[in-house]
Image (cartoon, rainbow, N blue to C red):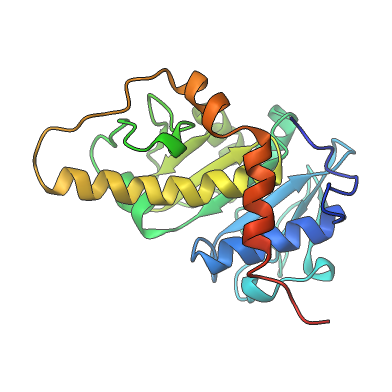
Length: 236
């Protein structure tokens, strides 16, 4: 199911182009903009690609705008300030090829709750963890030590919330990470709306791993990628 990050994907995109497309897709959904970023581990496990930092128009991201960094790289102007969470995840879990960090409203709202709910209320969000990891520090992830701490907290969960801040979402491919991120924000909105009416919830009763394998196989990631990519094509 994992696509090597340093080879052309089935749609013909090279890694830099694929990450640039991912950046534009996430921008189209309002998941990243002034803030927020996405990464892709290369075939060299000591290097990763990351989108431009704050102040750059993510909806116009091109392959030449993508940065390639070592896992030991430090922040410099033009890079995402919180690049350390990406480096830490790719170092600790090289099977995780992509990480997305968002400040989107629904996920941030869940992160502001004393106990973020873990109920699964949507079939297509079956990657939602049964216990949602929650980063409790009121500060950004701006060094390698903080990145390592966040990754330890996240464990093998596909989603972790950062209180008063946002969320991180991971995937074995950038396509999976992007699809999960869009669905996670949608699911967070469903949860918030369902809690607002004050009536009992009816969570999905099927085991989540089993449901994910059935509802969201890799073929759906590719299908979603083709669909989403068609909206963010750039003129030459």
